[in-house]
Image (cartoon, rainbow, N blue to C red):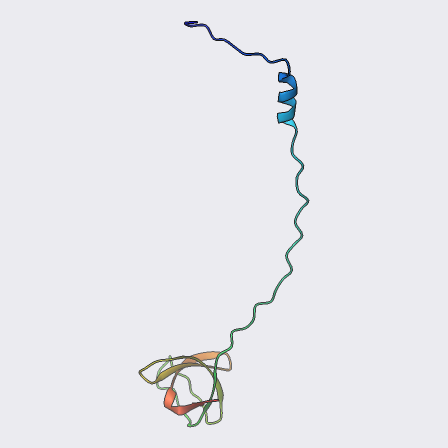
Length: 98
């Protein structure tokens, strides 16, 4: 058998080839997923108890009785708050949580 290739021929080879060429049924297209509205994030609220005029660009000017969202509290005493779509730093001692 040196240098000679041998082939095995089976009588049902054409059927085997046809079976391989049949495309499997495809799944129906998936329905679009329903749109789920993301819940807006809620923050704790605080009431401003003293007027404060911003001293720097990253601070907020707020007035007594304004209600703010407390985004974060820093141990230094400065809190990041949000009021009327703006966020900035504000002295934590000028607010009370509600």
